[in-house]
Length: 148
Image (cartoon, rainbow, N blue to C red; front, side):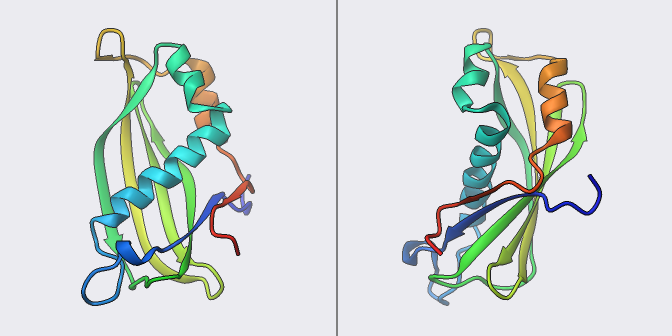
């Protein structure tokens, strides 16, 4: 629905995720994407195991991150996730990271997954019920691990 908030996931930056300059080390954003998307998938499907029980899984084929501003130790970040392109065997999720509290725009990322069948380690077409869940997304859902 237009204007609705996307799925949101909040987490706190830990000391070990920062570099010598005292800001989040660039490679940690791949971890942030993975953690946020796992919460998104859990919200969409009820449990990641639901995918695996259907002999389905997802594998990353592309991840692009663009940094806008630094995040620091103890910042609470909010990842906002919306579906991007949904193709025949792959789909893209768009994430935006904001600092919770002042809404500072920290980074954005696009991650593309291919749907596979683990039993044969080959890609498969996205089934209609999965496509519908991806298209609907999880608007206005908020999961927080930040303790704010």
